[in-house]
Each structure stands twice: as C-alpha cells, then as structure tokens.
Length: 462
Image (cartoon, rainbow, N blue to C red; front, side, top):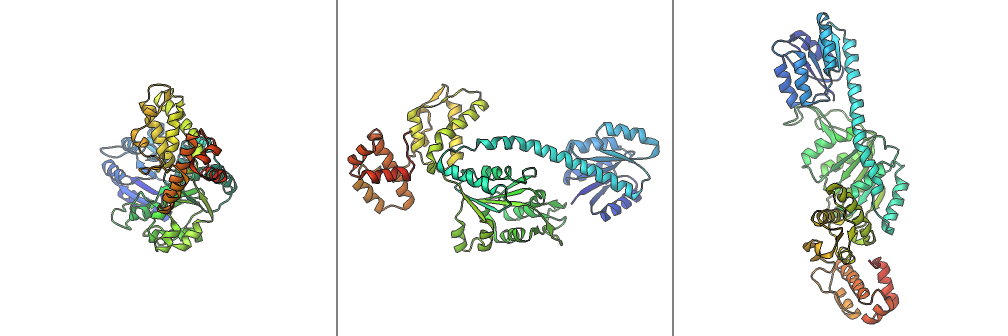
C-alpha cells in the first residue's frame, strides 16, 4: 500500500487531506511541523510527502532537504498559497517533484499525487533495469562444455520461453541461482523483475512477512503496511532458494499462490492477485522429506513441473580447466594481476580434489591463489595445503589391483565406493602413462571393464 506523509501546521487542512487520501486508498500519516515530520520519516519509508511551504521554525524547503537526505528518491509535493508561487517554483529547482496552490480541489490533489507516484515508479524501474543489465551480460559466462552441462543448457532453452514452474536440484555451490537467472532472462518475462529469496537465511516469521507482506499493526513492530516480495515481483520471476527449509505454514500459503495465483498479507482481510513465474531450488532430498512428513507432497509435485538437476563439480571434472581460466580472468582484472594459468601438476591436484563446495569453493580457491601468487604460472606448491590434503580418496589408501578394489567395495557405502573407484582408475592410468591396455594388465582387470569405468567417470588425461 502507498504511504503518504502530510506536513502542515493547519489542523483542518491536515485532517481533510488525510480523510481524502484515505478514501482514495492511500495510507496517510500527518505531522504539524518539520521536526515531527522528520521523526516520522525516520521510522516509515514513505512513498510521497505533501509539505506546506510556509511553516514556523522550519519551512517546507528545509523539511524537503532533510527528507531527501534520508531518501533521495522521495517525491515531495510543495503546498503553497498564491503569494508564494515563485518560492514554489524555486522549490522545484531544488528537487521538489511538483507544487500545488492552495486552496485546491480534491480531484486536483489526486491527479498531482498520481502523476508524481507514476514518475517515481518509472525512475525506480529504470534504475532497477540498469542494475540488471550487468547481470544479463554475464549469463554467457555460465561455464560448461561437459555433456552434463550441455544437457542442462538444452533444457533451459526448451523451458525458458514457457511459464512452467521449475525445481532446480543440486548440491550447494553448483550455481542454482545463476541457472534460475538464465531461465528468467531467456523468458517472455525478461523485461520484468527477477526477485530471489533464500528461505534458509531468515527466521519463519520474518520470511513470511518478506514473502507475503503485512498490514500496519498486524503484529508488534508492524508500524507501516509493507508490500511482500511476491507482489513486488508481479509480472516477473520469483526464485525461492533452499525451498526445503520452508515451514509447513509457509508451504501451505505457497501452494495457494501456485494454485490460485493469490495470497493474503499477514493481518490482511483481502487476497491479493499475483502473476509470477516460480522457480524453486534445493540441495535437500525432498522425496525423503515427504516420507518423514517434513515437506508437503502436493507442493512438491506443483514445484516439480520441470525438474532440473545440476551436476556436482566432481561429476563434471572436464569443466575444471575452463572454470579455472574463467576465474583467473575475473580475479586478474579485480586484483590487477596477469596470471596465465596453472602447471600440469597443479591442475592434476585440482582434478583429484573432491570439491564438496563445488564451483563456489573452486572460485574461492582461485581467488586465493591469485592473491598469493607473484608469478605468471601457479604450481602445485602454491595450491592451498588444506586442499592438497583432501583428495578424492581422503584418508583411505587407493587399492592397487582389481582384487583389492573388489574387497574394499564390499565394506563401503556407495558414495565412498565411487570416490575410491574413480581414484583407483586415475591412479592406474597415470602409472601406465594413460595406456588402458597396459593399466588393465597391471591390475588384473579386463580391458573392457576398465574402459567402462573410464566412461562412467568421464575420465580423460589432464
């Protein structure tokens, strides 16, 4: 709801303006002088202010100056008498959005307010679009030539032009929000807003208010009516990250948004319609959460109209050199460095690491290496020691032959087996200088079986 501040030392004018603007659907606060107005403005983010030019102690120009220090984009309409029109024009030069001469008709003040609010909205949209331009340009920088990522790109091209709800699943650090942004900026809603919310970053009560908004006085601390982010995103795309962290109450309200395209603000008595495209993401196993009663099954299937699974970095190791080079380019420019790349031995170390933090962790490591390196090439000694100490095989020795591998697989969990098995294949291939036939003979394995493991883990010479 639009909130307006009326500042005038005339009691009757303040009251009549408040009644008029309330009847037009605005929320209105009043102040009898400049000091009171500034106190209120510190507590409430007003959308517009009507300020009388002539007031004792602090005139309208001074009030406007202080209001703009708090919020430079706040539109201020100066109210003035016939004898001070020239001063009102001067106020326009100093930043007033408009002025109106007293006495004025109700339809006149209504038109002035609608005009300044429309201009303010247009300015806000332009600023928002400028901020988003840079992000749009960077979508070509989603790095990935591996088969797994090519499949993701192909899926994005198919679903982006539709309005289908999408569920992106993948481990932390795999780039789920970047994929959501790519979908938005290749959709029919690309000229509208992309709003992202991390469900795990806010407590339940605050998250509900952020999503759905609230009306003034609906709870302690609700000193002003606030629009929810769902309403802000109207016409655009709404991205819910870590949707698995939503409480059951918010899950129910979100389901209504998907089914009925409407929601009710906290403390509200009427539903608000909203037109959004919803993209959700999670690193949790929602199917398991459903079995445990932690996530609504009906919401899950509403979200999973089009599922997209992002591979972990260890599943797409072929992309590591591309990603490393991309991050070198980024942080060379940021740190004013000229690092060209990494040595073969250092790259092997990066290949061998398990990357539990995925692309986000790789980016942090590259930034750290750029900061610490003084030469053009990074060698193994410059890779952080903690990374070198955590290989795919962790603290378990890699089996040296086929029999040892089979015995180890019997007593280990699936995830650990895959790590060891991959490390085993890389180890034997390195020893044979990447000769598969020789490697198979060395460990007592059939050549076709070793080839199958090479294909399974997409292993190539570094």
